[in-house]
Length: 251
Image (tube, rainbow, N blue to C red; front, side, top):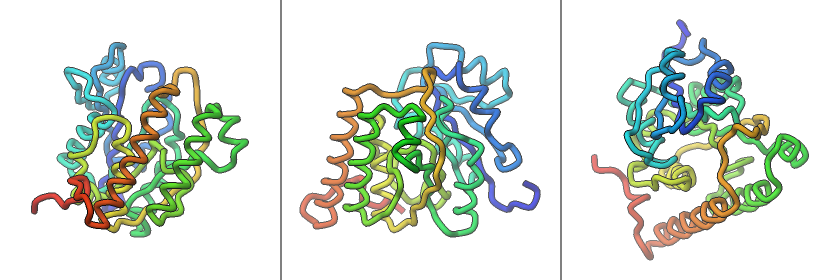
């Protein structure tokens, strides 16, 4: 850390993460992270008390703002604290945080601006790791479509393990994004629209009983939301229907 010129902040968007928070923190390589910040989205368990006992700075929402709303607070706070790279780690232990330096390393070295942890190395590994079959199907179908429309070649476009450069966060109008789960897909399309370089590395699939996950109905809504984001982007690019998600922020 002493030789690194970039400031790396890990943000943990938390909601009822009491059972998995400590395990997640144990995996984060502290030598490769300057700060860890937890944003609690009005949890009803002891997430905040545990985080404070573990020495984490905590920002707490007085009411639930949703997954996207939580991320907005994460990124505002990280930028305010001077982050050069922000890595989002879900505190539900679904992603292997030991691989954080791989994501941030590609950004530090100027290879990519946005990095993802891809859980889909092989079908057998993903299903063996506990990913429900219907989620695997939706993941593969939507990822293939997004790659086709966006001109990318990502292994997975639905990972919650992500790293962004400061320039990305300062450029994209992510404050206009949804407060729900489709925030992630809006962010990807925005990243492509504004010309940033995207990449990914493989990470293990790890679905546990205590890990947070949306059910079938919410997954369908999320999938439809993803398709709508792609449609809005195409219509915006063709100059048929302008969309504020793809309009630059005021200078």
